[in-house]
Image (cartoon, rainbow, N blue to C red; front, side, top):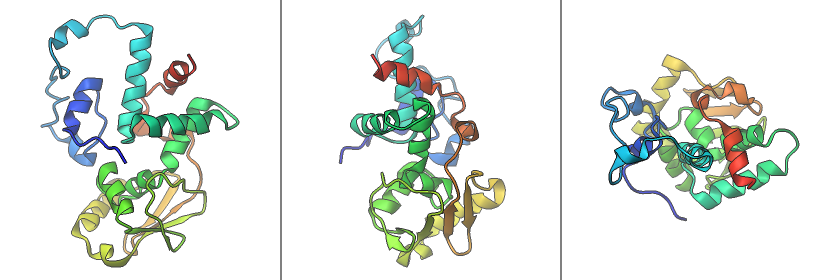
Length: 211
């Protein structure tokens, strides 16, 4: 499966906003966005003028896609699923992205970033309802129990990530037992509850794909 292996800070600079691709480490003062670094590429100042409607929509799509660590085809497939569901397509898109197993593992603080969470899933360290699942795009349902299994329970990186639960807790649609390294996906989130991407205008993504 294709994946981006370049410097992730470059992606944040390209979008001109924090995508938190390194998890909580992005809150550091060393983040390039805090230093107001210019976008990557040649002659970046010439690209800072007024953007066309298409450019605005494209940048919004790229920011959302990169925030969840998806490649273009994966993101497009998710959009197509959202399009077939009742309700607002933009809201459906966010909910589907939040239901991805790698994202839920990250939200439960089993990993410090979505990339790390995806690795845990791909390596078979995560179970859903007691059954090992190694597909990062697996869609979690309300009531599902997600747990760290096997030797992974002794991994220091997971223990360190879980320390964040004591500081800031988890999203309101989740429950976590840090001692047991288990969590529950209580219900599908509402769009307004996904506060860390509040600046994303998903309607622009819908308009872009609808052309």
